[in-house]
Amino acid sequence: MLVGRTLFIGLSLSTLACASTGSPPAVQPTTATTVTAAVDTVVQTDTIVVERQNTELEARVARLEIMLLERNARIVDLTGTLAETRQEVVRNLAKLQSQASRAEAASGLAEAEIALQSIARMSGAQELPSYSEATAALEEGSQAFAAENFGGALYLATQARSLAASARSRLDPGSAGELRPGETVFATRVPLRTIDQRANVRQGPGLEHGVVATLDAATPVVGQSYTDEWVRIEDDEGREGWIFHTLVMARSP
Image (tube, rainbow, N blue to C red; front, side, top):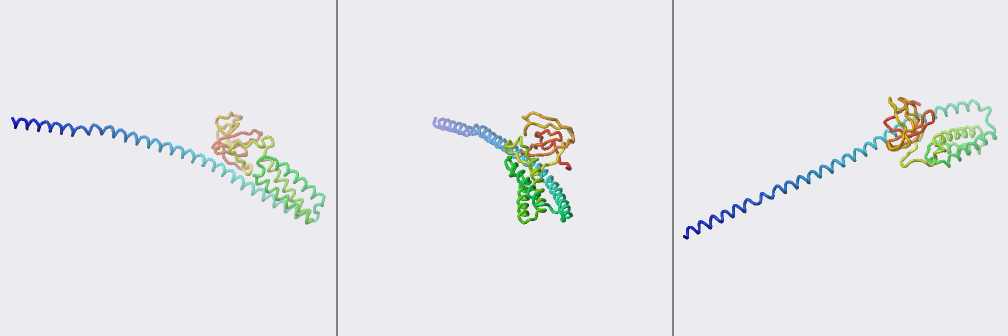
């Protein structure tokens, strides 16, 4: 009987040991499922960050492309201004024997001053290089007049009026003070043309704005200002609006 009880107790302990040994694996699938869910969440977050970075990069590239168009146009404009200035100086040198009178110089300076005063009240004028150059030319002209160099004073007054006219052409009096948020005025008028396909011109910088005109392929336009991805243009018929930057390209003035 003692041997039988000992055998029974031994078998019972073995059974309990086996039962306790087999219970832990049942917890493992739950742990594995939790780890997999955490990994999926991390991958999704990384994808969203990459898409945001790509969007910001595309906006920066678009803005740089537009600024490059402005820079090239500015170089062409300065080159033309330099050539015109040289020709004007040559003409003045040829007329040294018939210099302008005091009255003519005074009248020219007065006209230049009035032109600049009218532009100074327009929104965005202070940011235009042509306005700053016109102001400097007027100051130099006044100094030449004080030194009784009436020919030089009249020449500088003419330069000031020309630069003032250039600044005025950049600023439409009817739209003064209506720059949109993020809109930047080009330093000089930028000669552009539409690409080799028709392009829509919209009321504002965005697809949500209505179409005001549809331009044919290779239509010449002039860039006036820009936002991150849109360019404000004017065509030969005087129509103004916004066009997406990839639909225009540089052209010779």
